[in-house]
Image (cartoon, rainbow, N blue to C red; front, side, top):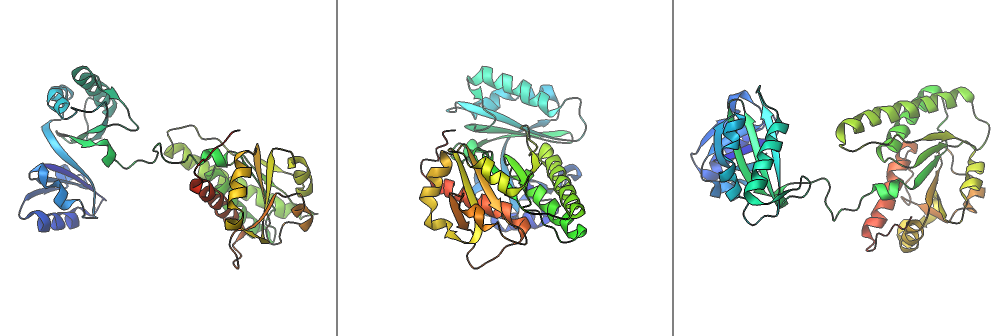
Length: 349
């Protein structure tokens, strides 16, 4: 038996392709009325024949089907333990649909303890050798085991942790000031981008007299965008999310203050060099920098006098001028790519 997960609404499409691949097999579509699920009554060895159907998101080869009762599920531990032979670590993934007198956490803890006693394996929720799926659908429970390598993971040891880079970056942004409505909209997008990347700080930095009310709306937009993204991050991340500090200061004074021995100053400007021409030097300099300070213009560019204080003046997209609110994601993505391509990826500070 195979338990199939699809996007909601794609169950019948997936079922049609499964029948084309496996023949006239019995398929329960939306068991107990739950969307995005199929139960295929066939030999688990046929799993490979349907793996390339794009409408299918997850395939769980079902080892045990039993009543959705905690004691009943725990009674199947010995059968599941046989599937963990040769593994050093495992994880329990429980998804409960319907009303029951136990929680998913109860299953994870109690079944996990039993399997540890039976197998000697340790629990590893992030990178297990085997993953035990307990899919509870109404009054039925389906239990299967898949190889840990088959799970799609957001975070794996070989991935570079981008927070190590972004947490060192201070972004110095000239405010977008044209009218209050435009200032509010652009400010909101900039605030959202700064928070999304969780940079060290965002400095709003005019370099001359500016209209106070337009600046007020720009800052209000930054605040609105930051809070909107922060709320999404709090729900999406299991870790603690840091709210990016936002400051206002004259750009010339920022440049003077940030010009320290272990800081690296970057100006984004169309007159600069292509990032590919300075990549090796850039990676080496930024890896050892205590702080990476990026200056970005708005409707006008960064004042030329600041170029003399910069370690790098970079043209991120030659022959293209991108919008002000795109500067943060474009710049940070380019810098991240440089570090991902670097073999050492060393951060000393």
